[in-house]
Length: 59
Image (tube, rainbow, N blue to C red; front, side, top):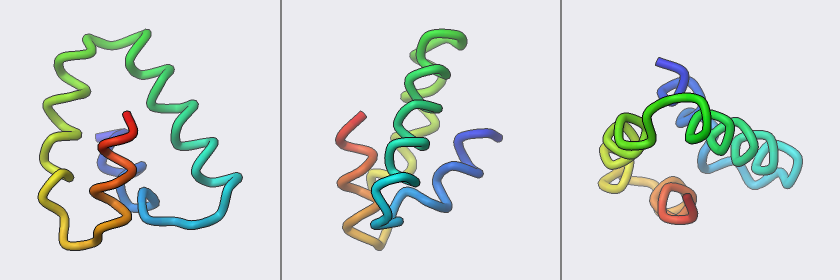
């Protein structure tokens, strides 16, 4: 659920927003099962927006 909320802002070009999303996802990787996080992120690899796909690939 948290990742779905973050995913709404994956395509955002503002540097501050990108940094906050990256830090939050890294915290999720450390505190939650990483396989579960990657499983949810994989859905966004087929997103219609190329920026969203790029940000998911950066994780």
